Length: 363
Image 1 (tube, rainbow, N blue to C red):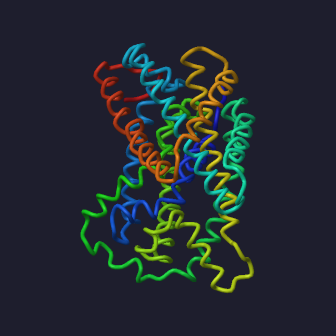
Image 2 (image 1 turned 90 degrees about the horizontal axis):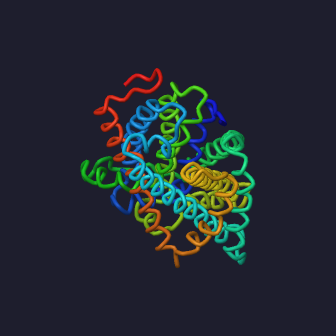
């Protein structure tokens, strides 16, 4: 079986999290809350994800070397376990299709105007097939290569954003109390979607005893990046302006042109690396869905990968407009917290009640 290191596990989790969410999180949070305190909701959402991640790692270490597709059968039986596994595969297919559609929309709008979105999506899919068929190790290596590049460019752009940031746009803090912040927490679910994939890929870790550390570090890094993004966007555009823009993170970067910088269309730098990050999220979803079918039906991974290719394309092209795409994103966010939050708690409780112990893992 392929194995991944602690560093690769942290980077995979972070790379999965910081895909589409970074482009739309400020707008979705501000729409729900109506206040500049969206960054507080991002922090609280991140803390919830860390808690859920620790529950997942607690569950997984009781079944060392097994993925959710395998140990779910031992916990709830063959039929219910297969149903849950197929549900997770379906979710992964929809998630992969959503990532593809978003990257197609953004690429077409900002970079390749006039290029058919079908061509953009199909190109991404074929590259994804090439990456997925060799297992999780190539995926992990690609994430490790791309993430530092993304991080450096992101921090550079955020430093430049200080010139357009106005602190008054972030005030007053908790002006309407804590209730709007609590109301805004669900709007962060899509951005943190991907932590639930630990139900599967933690089985590939070389040091499974460090899974909790990987989960906490990966989520913490994502949370910090999201807080910075949210503060910069709201501080640079204001609450009212953020509500109106479809991709506020990109739009705030375009403000740099007004500051007389040497580079024009500076947002192209961010979009280039962010498209790569969204691609890695798609590839991870695609691989995990293919792995699920392979383990459930005892087929080869390559066969399942090619089988899923047209299905993902059809799902990606199904939404008719951007509103349908965003609604699909909301659905994914809530489903993520079912698979990453509610379901692991239920399965862990059943495991504890049955007093099952696997390997040297402690309860």
